[in-house]
Image (cartoon, rainbow, N blue to C red; front, side, top):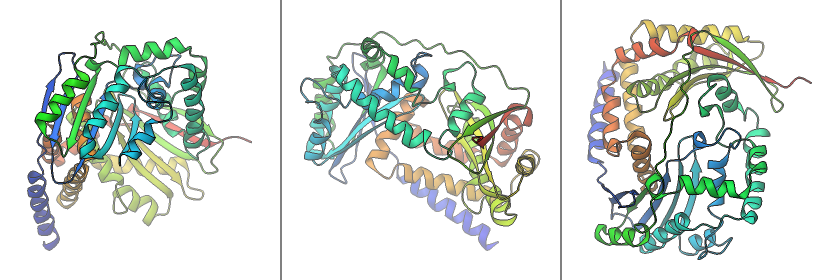
Length: 437
């Protein structure tokens, strides 16, 4: 009773705190279609200027994979007004930091400066969009950089190509079958004009969302945004018509070999609905219940108590068109794949049949309340969330409302969603094995 009362009290206190953290913002469109989101927070003298382009790996041609990620690097090469190699130096010299990242669905660039350099951040992002230098020198330079990243993070890293195996198993038609970093042969065989064509199609204001967050003056910021971005010509509308995947109705099994491992891994993978759906949020909670932390169901059973696995995890990877739910397990000693599968399936069956305990449910709610608060604990985090909710979810105010979706998920929802998506006839088993000698 004491533990249960404490959990309920903690939920109330955290809920009250998160309500107090409402993120206020203004949003509007420029005449050229660029979406602008402004968030004023004058508590600290910093400002983040960020642009999210609605272009990712899924937008690439079949034989030109890796383009979206390549541009994440290429667009730091400079402009007519920023000499090659000077981008990072300008940022650092003005007390700032910057970075970029790419997913299957979008590409994101940002700078964080002391607030007296807000105008500099806006100018730099406008430069990037208006007239980046895309030439053979830059392509050749970034080709080497990306190849090294691929070697370090994927090809030479133990278990580094697990996502490659998952995508190849789950997707046959949709471009999610390709990885974000792509195939280096596609980049190597591309002509310079193809890079310019990709930029012209996707790096246009009507495919971009600008976020300015932090210690700003709204009126002044709007004037600068208009000065730097409103005259950039609008691009052609982007039409997406990706092929739909056939439902998975029969369990299949594939094998993938990794020369960098000595111990196999086994994956049980499911294609699930878009991250925009409520069911995707329920699957988030299911993954947390099963494997978030040492007190989670699968960790306690397979790693801690029965010593059958070195590692076990349930992952929900949300994406714009489809999502991925995957169980990942590395066996301990002579534990067989069949044993791991049977034990994982048994826990899934419990979810599909019985309601989780009220105590476990309150624990889940507390975890998601904490995640919500922490995701908006910095100006950089707020800027990223604002852009993501607008571009990928279609509702910027989910930065405040999404937690209510999780709060509304019931124990019955958890049971029903597990029963709907996590069945053996809906999955692909992946045997991720050491390469044969």
